[in-house]
Each structure stands twice: as structure tokens, then as C-alpha cells.
Image 1 (tube, rainbow, N blue to C red):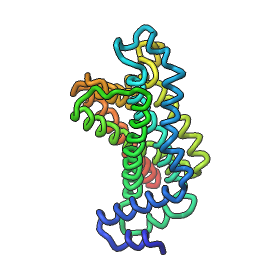
Image 2 (image 1 turned 120 degrees about the horizontal axis):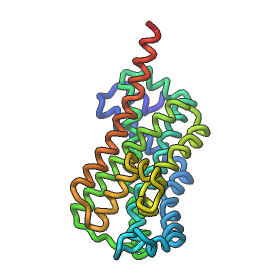
Image 3 (image 1 turned 60 degrees about the horizontal axis):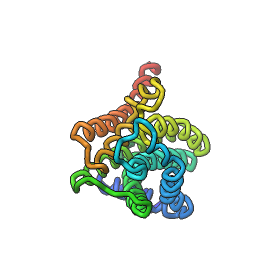
Image 4 (image 1 turned 60 degrees about the vertical axis):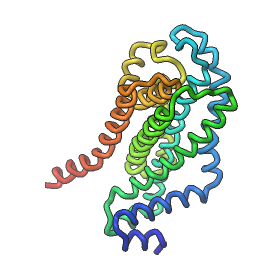
Length: 269
């Protein structure tokens, strides 16, 4: 029996969550290559995208007086959070393949705690990625135009988005239960979330059907809110919309397992 399992068995909820979170952080640290790529990939993408697509700033529909690096950096924060969400899905699938999920199910603890621990783990790495990405952006000429309140609001939006993405991809991992399959499925979900948004170009420049899809995309709303706070032009409505969209997705994903359980129970009777 592992130390984590022992701690979970004999501890109240707070200590159980702490034990599971520490276990997830240690697991991530044991694979330094994956940790390095997870933290540095967004910086590489920022450098490439800021150079390859900077001509977008001269096109129609682009905000006047805004540099492309200032436009892109908040988007990369949101995109990196979506990309990292797949880690939660792979982690959930691995717990199924190595039998740890079944061991947790046999312990006297809430079945939602492993998922919550994965979310906390992703939130920690989201903040670390944001710090590294911010340093890289400054070296490329990025300038934060907002206030301290804008910075705090942006962090809140980013962390809530990380929670929603962790829940979404964690559910995919729990359903598919194979890390290789989860990676491919995660890509299928991740791509429209990333690109059907204002991350890399204004939504107004997209076809009408993509604009309609963007209106219900939580990543699009998070990107708009983050960009608004970076530029110092965000409104309370922007932040609220981003939070509501992310929390709505989070709640919907969280409700799926309970709904599946109810359907199975009904069929059994």
C-alpha cells in the first residue's frame, strides 16, 4: 500500500485532497521531459506565432494601435491552458490502466476527489506557465497596459478556465481509459476550442458559421477577457461572461457522470 493510499484512507476530506494533490504533483515531477515540454511549448508557440502571423496586425478588423504581441500573448495564455488540459485526461486514463482508479474507489472517500486533485494540479502548472510565458512575451516587446485589478482578474479567469478544461479532458480520460486514445480524442476537442476563437485573429474576419460557434466557445470568451485586461479595456461584463462560460462548461461536464449513473440505474430497474 502506498503512502498516498494510506493517507487517503485515514484522513478527512481536506487531508485526502492534499494527499492526492501532492501525489499528482510528484507524478508530474517524475517525468521531467513531459514537465519541460508542458511548460516550454507555449513559449515556443508564442515566438513562432508572433513572427509568422504578425502581418495580421496590418489587416482590416485588427484593433487600431495594438501590437500583435500584445494581441497574441493573452490568447496564448488561454491556448496553453487548453493544451495542458489534455494532461488531466491522460492522467485519468493512466489511473484506470494501472488499477489506481479501482483502488481509490474502494477507499472511504468521495469519488470526485481524484478529479479535484487533478484540477488543483493543473491550476498550479497554469500559473507556472503563465509566469514563464509572460517573461518570454516581455522579451518580445509585450507591454501590460492594465492595472493591478486587471492582473488579478486575468489570473482568476485563467484559473477557472484551467478548471473547466481539466474537468472536460478528465471526463474524456475516465470514459476512454486508454492514454493513447485520449491523446487523439483530446486533439479533436482541443483544435476547435483553440482556433474557433479570437486567439489568433479577430472573430469578425472569420466565416459566419465560425463566428456563431465562437459565441458559445468558453475559450473565445476567456481570450477576449484576458486580452481586455492586458490592454486595460476590459469591462466587468467581459470578465463575468468569461467566468460564466467556463463555469457553465465545468458544471455541465461534472453533471455528465451523474447523468450516466442515473440512466444506467433506470435501465437496471
